[in-house]
Image 1: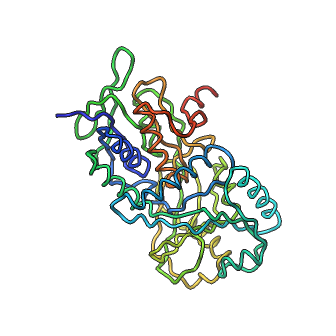
Image 2: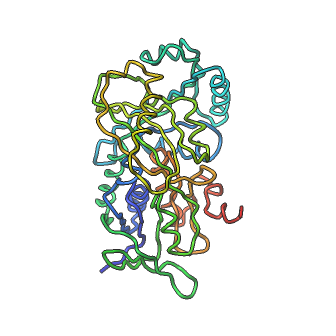
Image 3: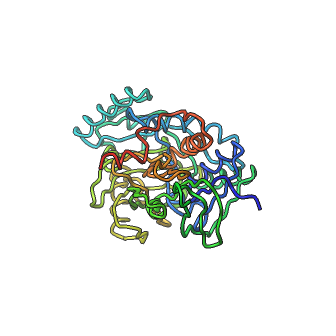
Length: 383
């Protein structure tokens, strides 16, 4: 039996991207997932694709991923529902307007397209919006995909290139050589898989995989909700409408529950209403109080939706890092061990380029984006 060159742990959008881009390079890949594909955060995302909003690694990753999504829309065997109709952040009051001005300047510094809008311009862009908002900031390059279709599409495409995709199989341990401590195999609930390379793409569970090789990977689960309504006629024109308070909540390390408007309407016509962030460990249960808070925040900005019926709620666990940057890196202390995690709420925005960068690292090619600020070692050096 031929052993795989690489074992990818995690069958979400990041893990499947790693498997796909490795398989495209002719690498023998074996992906394992403890549940079904996209059963974690990838199956609980709304599908929004961020535009370059501020200078730094996030802008580099989202810009590169946006180009790859255009290719994936043609390459993958499933319709990923890719479209670009822009992202709108709403300024509720004068304080938010001042933040909007900063966001506008940061986007220009990042080389992204951005427009600062007054109240009349925002309401022309989104006619169903409450008329008392102060203004907003619009990113024309913001987009949307169906994260479940992207995940499944990349898995199918990787399998077509020879990859093994094995679901309902958990990693129980990772064996290392006695000499240099390099990866030699992955022990799973379905048996032992000999390999010299492992990619840890386990999302919120990445820390648990890291402990198998003695690494401290500072990723915590950060819970979020999405409220899904019945299909309705088009309510919003942009692919994503959020409030400016969403930005601060996303970047904050606040341990308390935070709730802000985020709304998307995919091609199915359902409204996807978020967002919430809270640290509650691995608890994915649904709290009626959080659901009520999310709905109330969305109705504050879109009061006409009071007659629309919510039909279900789902939760997911975002992989959070202390500096709000992902980890896309080799682990220097463990030869053959790579990490692709910590994207928090932007995993779907950055998945394709993350998979491509990991493939470049593993095959020994110069990564097309500098990875110094995304290295795992930044945390050990800081300590």
